[in-house]
Length: 217
Image (cartoon, rainbow, N blue to C red; front, top):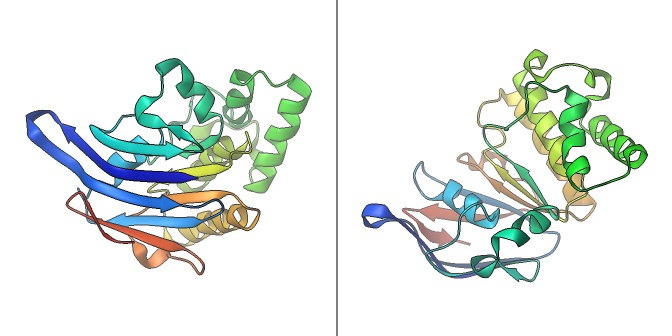
């Protein structure tokens, strides 16, 4: 599913966020990427999500080398990915339902099928009864569950999450991780960026970063 080889990411002024990373993540794996603040976790998330490109090395996701991917091909790649950002990137001028419908509309799904999938995704995360609400009216945990519903509504084979429990209380964080476990149980590959390894779960693997290098795999 994911193969990284000698990946380095260098920013202006010679700042190296990642240095010579090599690892593989197989289909259906649950992997936590951990490390101290500034270790390079979010940079790695951006590379895996094709938001940025590595300075050198290669990242292959589902058979496609992201370093060589043309800009026009990126939207098609992302239809296979579910992306959950730390700041959620919800649309606060649209309802809960419309937030989830958006990626299906972009993908050109027929309206009836799109509505069916959106309702199923909201039901999965426990927000079906809030479909007409505005995101601002949701709690922090509910907003994160909405972000997850939007990420999985296209039925991605790979789900990438950047610090999905960072701003949540312990109960809400536990609910989010229970959702991830349920996706893992049906074969979705999950890569979860977290600063807190206490959320490691049985059957998961950990990749630990320190100062941009992989120190544990």
